Amino acid sequence: MLPANDGGGPFVQFATNPFVVIVLLSVMLTGFVLELFTPGFGFPGAAGTLALILFITGHVMSGDADIMTVLLILFGILFILAEVILPGGIVGLIGFILFSAGVLFAGASMHWMAISLLIAFSISTAALILMVKVLGKEMKFFKKFILNDSTNTEHGYVSNENRSDLIGKKGITKTPLRPSGTVDIDGERIDAVAEGVFILTGKEVAVVKTEGARIVVRELE
Image (cartoon, rainbow, N blue to C red; front, side):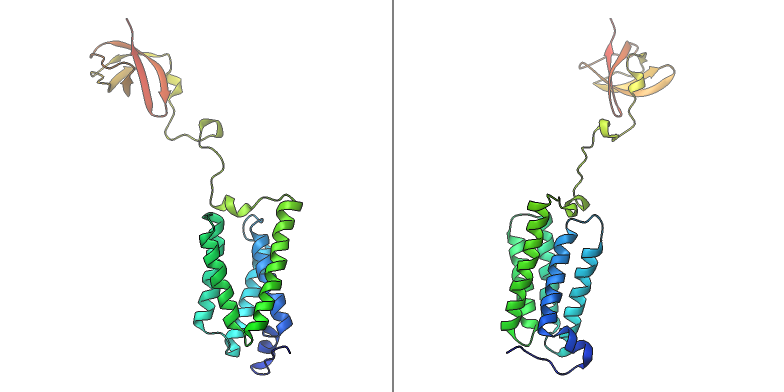
């Protein structure tokens, strides 16, 4: 026999209806799964969030769920999402346990909530397999937290101003380079590093390499 909730008004009766509970849990979990493949925050995430709000609100208003139950569900979802960023299994397992416990304690019938959870998890798992194995989709969720491009000059990244225009130019050391010091090149005083160990003041040098703000000079014979 299915559990029934006859009090609390039409909304509560709707949100706690056993079959509606299955739909809400399925939309919630499947929505969050599909959101992993959506750049930004899209329709699946919005649908999952709405289902979560309806489920929690209905069961709190019915008196079946309390603040501890709500926290179990919310922290469970957060831990499951954290597993995507911090793979290893432990965080996800904790999240699964917390979420499941929250849902089980939220309903008037723990037996029916367990059946509802099993159906919802089966549907969301099928959706995940479909996206990854059949459609070959990649999780966009990772890209919100991981920088995929390498930070090199080919991709336009520079840590400091690159003075590659100085390569080959000659100048005079204004201070000893031990191995760093100051060099005058075309009237511009520039911090430079000796290619060797030591260059005296007043020596003629040439720029042989630049690495961002690091300018390497070699003494000319």
